[in-house]
Image 1 (spheres, rainbow, N blue to C red):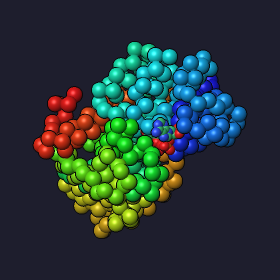
Image 2: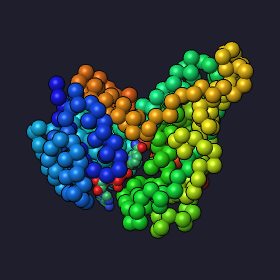
Image 3: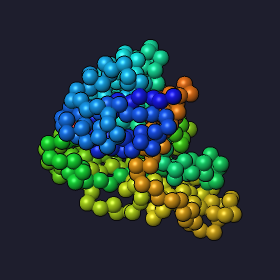
Length: 345
Ligand SMILES: NC(=O)c1ccc[n+]([C@@H]2O[C@H](COP(=O)([O-])OP(=O)(O)OC[C@H]3O[C@@H](n4cnc5c(N)ncnc54)[C@H](O)[C@@H]3O)[C@@H](O)[C@H]2O)c1
């Protein structure tokens, strides 16, 4: 079985998707690449994938009978329009994070895919990082006992990553800044680790250091999970350096009743109950894989789910919990009050 793929968007993350499809040549073949802004980018990607077609409008991808599934690697404001059309055209969908601009748009995508009997998966690649999978296993095995708290942060500088004028600096094209663009990764991963989020409190603001960015480039949040775990997150899109070096530029500290796990200078475990980790802060030497690998694993999972007709780990339906948290964080920051997720559903 060869699953025929249409690439929609040929920018930064699309190159990782393309690498994923190349690595999964036993399951899939990219037949068309689309970039609305630069046909040259589409042509380059098509050529690199062994002679796919290149087009400059996404409708031309989903109209094709020889496309079974699409990878949507576009600015956020276009996710729902393209995903809805793709579902109605009977295509399976892999859409980059965030699934859409908000929960309402995301829910509509899930309903459209369900009605069409097609899969929708969200590119939450952090769940596919092998170090994260290892850490989840340690938590599930009870190595640090009952988890009580988690701290997480991210340090990036947006204007060093995207050119002036990019859609990334505009709220009407992104739906928001640091929260929906980046915190979405950890919120989703932590839901995978710890279950659903009950309520949030958040602050968002602007440093003025990212051109005329009108979406937030700084955010702080408190997250309470349904099982009582308290999380504290800090996100900055104006950080020159990562003050606490981590492989991903994202700090994660997980506090348990009987130990802790953190990723400062590599993943470390301390446990009062597992002899192997009881001597101190043990570096567990997990290999640091290139970022692209997580996308390669994600793409393979997407294809295997289509082949086997099973729901993906990062299904659209699962992702509604992540998008609800995003909506709640923005509501909390706007109203300056705690927001219960039950009130945004
Ligand atoms: N999983 C990850 O780690 C990760 C990393 C980066 C981006 N992403 C996500 O991937 C998606 C695409 O991001 P990217 O970094 O590849 O973006 P990009 O700007 O590099 O490419 C996006 C695509 O949109 C086109 N485009 C550029 N400006 C546009 C505009 N103003 N209006 C419409 N289209 C425009 C580009 O030509 C390209 O096809 C987003 O959803 C983003 O959040 C995910």
